[in-house]
Image (cartoon, rainbow, N blue to C red; front, side):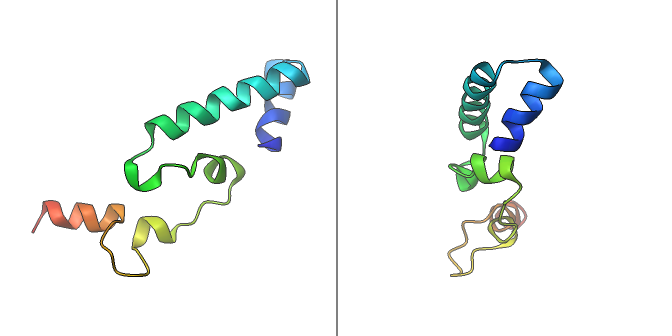
Length: 75
């Protein structure tokens, strides 16, 4: 989140306080609009620490990944 705050300060000219508040709004927005399988991963996405494995398949074989759901559409 620090990178986002810094971008908001540098590029949007926001004060550090406003940039921090804006980053919370952005995070809330992202988390609300992510697919169910990615809920709660907004901060990881913003920090660049997104786990690609969660898109490619569930390690436990639970069938909850986006790829698994897409396969279900065609079977």
